[in-house]
Image (cartoon, rainbow, N blue to C red; front, side):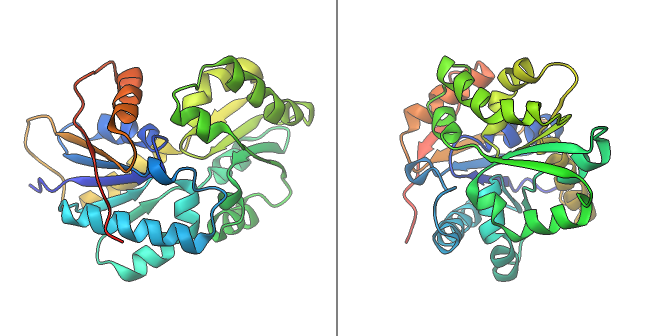
Length: 266
């Protein structure tokens, strides 16, 4: 039995797409989520700055007693995961665009990847693409503006639909049959994306694979919570708690989530 919480952080609310998968797989675990919404988006920022943010948030989550930390942000994973693993004695699980899954499943040998500038520029993305996507045509598209829409809860808006058409229509014209969501904010747009691409294109969300990786690590370390009571969730934000509360209500239907504002140490 280990009742210490699982920590999850993202540049904002996007990592809640990962939280949902983790919560579904681990109903008895306690979870602490941190949304760095005051400094969102991370995508255009320099890697050094994002790494500094990641260290601050990691220190905060360690103060909450977390036994494992999920970097539920593709951009932060690309910029900081190596530094975090080298600097802290705790397991980290990061995000990686599901290029391998898309490359293995494509019939047209053409895949689309929607991600942030920071993710495309990171070592993990380049290494994964080189290893698994040889001979596969990848249409890469920076999803500029999507994070900001998701942060406002506008993931089903006409504005979102227009922006997604702009990014996805060229992929469809190129005959992709797999689209990889390379940012944790993007799964909230998945219903719209699936409406645009139709039934013959697979839209891949890496969050379920992250939850399985967490299961592997906690099992190996014998850190799974064995109590039968349901786990607690605490949500922190560096922005306004009402924004996070509103977003959580929209995706869970629960208006009583424990949302708190946190001031990070510099």
